Image (cartoon, one colour):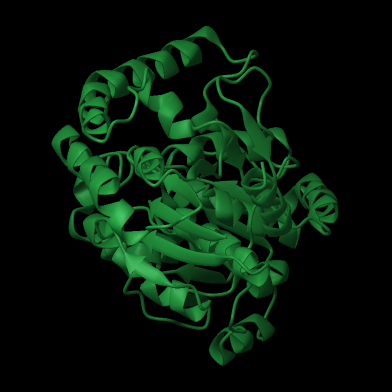
Length: 396
């Protein structure tokens, strides 16, 4: 079968879809990845056919960090959102022609229509259940906020999408969010960490988080750092925007002084410039599966993929969320007893990070619970489960 994976989002959206693509190709399917241009190398490393599609999300964040109030995609204007949706509806059919199934991930409001034009099956893949709407146990205010968001999406996009669908002889849609979600949303995150709540608005099947095995081992200088003292702390904020890299370098030095712990700092999308010394090591992209089990704790942004990797390593974690799923993940890890409660990324200070690190290290219950969760996840394979589900959908 021919399957297209269309993604508009950050690395956290693209990497698990590349993992899925490798699983599908292993089973004999033809797969193409359509994603922002900065993901070409990642796809190439995993032998996935790739077409650059959509804006460069990384460039958008790095060029305008001060404008990112809730993530790069969230700050796109309604006008730009319509342009991106039009590109998805109008350009994709020519790129992914003859696709039997189109898998969307991220902000892909026009991809379902593209699949309808091709007469293919559409499925949305999500990595955090909050996109399904509120559950039966959610407070009234959450239901109101989700309903308002859904209303606004319809106000801005429904007539626009239906006008294009009419030109292609397709029936009108009644609700943009429901059209985006599709018939059966694939919830590709771990039930042990983030189960989809009962009573959500949209039909779904939960599989598990799709881990992409690294092609590389730890670099020698990282190995040397790990072996030169007690287990360090990892600090990384992924694609979160940082307007003053120099400021954060000073913050990390203060964290080191307050905790008397060695630190491994991810440069992330901010490309932090800090110079390495015997207590602080700045690193570029690094394989989490080899690093995290050798740490004392992880301080991060609350991204779903990083959360899944930490959980499998069995170490305590603390999240300082910035947008969307990160807030839900932060609440969930506290609820599960995997780490302490924290403030948001916007309010982060050296003292807040130092306090979280000390709690992770001193409270044995966090490590005990982390190891318990790691044991439950040891034999799970989100890629295999998701491939099985997709093949079942294709054979209907």
